[in-house]
Amino acid sequence: MTALCAKLLAQYQQAAAYLNGLIQGPPSPPPGATPEQIRARAQARLARLRRFLEFLGRPHESYPTVHVTGTSGKGSTATFIASILTAAGYHVGLHTSPYLQVETEKLQLDRALLPADRFARYVAELDQAIQRWNARGEERLTYGECWTALTFLAFAEERVDIAVIEVGVGGRFDLTNVIMPEVAVITSVGLDHVRTLGPTIRDIAWHKAGILKPGRPGVTTVTDPELLEIIRREAETVGAPLDIVQPEHDYALLRCDATGTWLLDYRRKTVFQLGLLGKFQIPNAAAALAAVEKLGHLPRGPITTDVVRRGLAEARIPGRFEIVQTSPTVILDGAHNPDKMRGLLESLACLPQPSRRILVFGVLEGHDALTMARLLAPHITMAIVTTPQALERPAADPAALAGCFADAQVPVQIVPLPQDAIAQALALAAPDDQIIVTGSLYLVGQVRERWYPHEAMICAATPWPAPAVTQAPCS
Image (tube, rainbow, N blue to C red; front, side, top):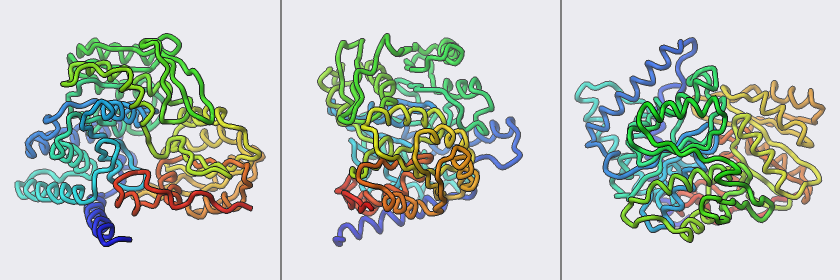
């Protein structure tokens, strides 16, 4: 490690430790909270953040934004939009959540991570502002409020031309929903985070629709008539022109194989190759295209087809159907709900079928882990159940998950630490086998360290430095 890298790493670690020190408990409402209490808590957090942003000088209003929500696909859609805008020559900020390995994955600039020294500088500025805020006797800010404020502050100081902001959870009461975006995108609606968003899929659709703003266009790829009606009604209520992007009418999958994924765009009468693998990326790319079309009033004018082609092809996002090695093939996918898991299984059909498929599986508590396990069981040869590590968030019971695979007659073992679980999978795999790591973005981030150590990511300011491992030993 060079002296410069060591310095950057120290600056990053100090800033990250400060931010993590703001965590005072689990991110979800306390056990036993009623729906009314959960909503009141969310509204209070949002109101407090608005006051703090006013205190900071409203940094979130100093650049145009695109806002993206959805149960599945929002991170990939935001990445596609940002990549197209970067290809068009704009200075683009991208906020996605959560991060896999390093905090600066949530603060990207033109497809690169925010450099560690500037990350540390903005965290120090945030700390000074928080101290002044507290000295005034204001309410204490939560970790999430501080992070959201940091995002807006950093992009303002970096003087981005535009920022693409991914929602954390839901939309209507999410902390990012303080912006007035140029366009709002709703990629999908499915059952996830039911404790905070409500028990029914209609409740969740209502939360997603809450990012639509008066007079600002909205885009959605939701197709279910009942859910689409909720989104349409919200758009009409607030006066947001809504573009409904429909499969087989506006776009289609042309091809998906080991060499890539191709989108057929009926609106532009063009075929685009995507930089992100997987069938499930097709509607995400279509949503991104529709969103970019709504940004024709930006300084450089309408974005050309050639720019779109380059932006889609150059898009990258770690941990989403990411192939980190071959022989054996290792695929990392952060699917953490049943809809995402179905998308993963569909995309596996695009690749050559392996001799055996070894699963490394772990889920955080609060997600529908058993349903995901049942979906995976018919498609795997053996399972290794592990426990993702997350601050203040316990993992789902590994014994219960292992029992689900055993009931399906799938050989299973429990290896508690994710790093040991992937090592065990690689030790068991032959060159023509396939290893799938899924169930949690936290799990994927911990396993990804084997190929892309976080120290190298910080020093190189990229999620894809030279991999530390190109091929693992096989038995």
